[in-house]
Length: 234
Image 1 (cartoon, rainbow, N blue to C red):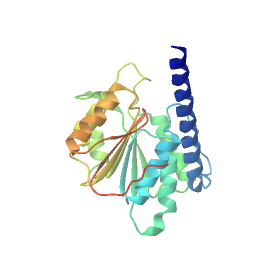
Image 2: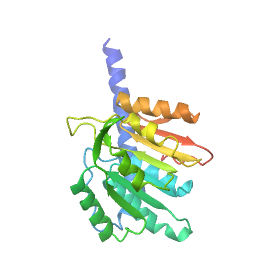
Image 3: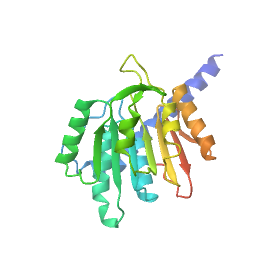
């Protein structure tokens, strides 16, 4: 029995070390972007991991994503916005729309993006919640107005918030709202797949798209529909 637990502990230590190395490598890989940001938005417990942001940046560049939609704003918004500006000389017309339910946070993220000089390709939109088919989810009339004519080929699902308010939202509503609004070829990043709802969302969408989902450990789900190159970080 003691040998069993020692093996388990050894395996856990090895996994944690690999995790730490991956996050450090990704943070270093992103330095070509972050070193040009004048006022970084602090990373917190609700921020996307460096590996996730690194993978998103890789996919934007390698697979030439042009219409990026993010549910939930923060440090990732600032890094992606800076990336779009820095690679703009490749002739690809890229745009980022970020949806955020907190008006004060919208103002802060928008101000920082403007200070960085990246507002030409990025917009952050205050989108309040309303009771609807997905529970206390984003106001869908407002979403329709903001996203009119916008067909995402990269979708980042990190909102709406799950734990900060008493009335919760069903993130599976993301699937029902967006499944027929995406571009023909697309990539989707689903954060927090350690939770059952996000894992179910990933599996359901992958089945609908006729593809196999990928998971980066327990917390990140990835779906890719159509042709494209492998963009997963090392």
